[in-house]
Amino acid sequence: MAIWNPWRGCHRISDGCRYCFIHEGDKKRKQDTRIIEKTLQFGAPIQQTKQGYKMKSNQQVFVCFSSDFLIEEADVWRQDCWKMIKERSDLNFFFLTKRIQRFEKVIPPDWGDGYNNVSIGVSVENQQMADERLTYFQTLPIKHKTIACQPLLGPISLSDYLTDIQLVVAGGEYHKNARLLNYDWILSLRKECMSHQVAFEFRQCGTHFIKEGKEYQLTYQQLFSQAKKAGINWYP
Ligand code: SF4
Image 1 (cartoon, helix red, strand yellow):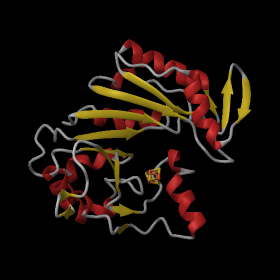
Image 2 (cartoon, protein in one colour; image 1 turned 135 degrees about the vertical axis):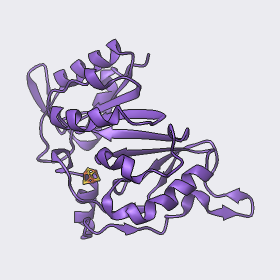
Image 3 (cartoon, rainbow, N blue to C red; image 1 turned 180 degrees about the vertical axis):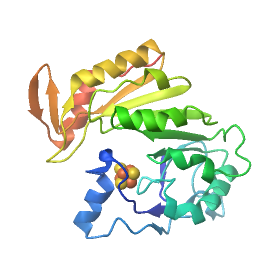
Image 4 (cartoon, rainbow, N blue to C red; image 1 turned 120 degrees about the vertical axis):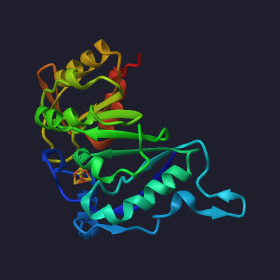
């Protein structure tokens, strides 16, 4: 697994961004997240040593975990990234976006039915964002599609949008003021995924978590350990 952050910085676009981990991290470092800038890692996938590419073949590359790959300010740089992605057909690139509506404006001219080595995840935090973003997402030619309901801010139904989806992940919010996550919402989403034969993963609880009517306050480590303990990931 590798991480490739060709640029950094982002601005909030919807309610799920309120406690964005990039903004929270930058606040501690006193860095202005709203400035979108290229990083020194920009050309990482095609950097070479005498032995060949530095980024080893046959691995998953997580793209833009310090920004949103489809953010407007990066339009001038993105075509170079697509070229690198195409050149490295031996790697599988994955990015997550809240800006899927920009997709058709920013794909490379030879995208066709989608690059085989690109997986795209759309992030939706509530029913409104699911309806807005996934209605469009389901029309797009993308070879590998996932949906991320994280942070999940309310009950949600994805049953209209699960065709051709390979994985749905869900989880709560981490912050001292985090909004509640009710375990019933997770179970209901899992049930929908199972009935559509779509893989489901419960990635993390929320700092403020409700299970069977009782509210819990969890530490950062417990977010993951308790989700794992629930043992509800499901694969067709
Ligand atoms: S779009 Fe993603 S990276 Fe950008 S502010 Fe929202 S949560 Fe953070």
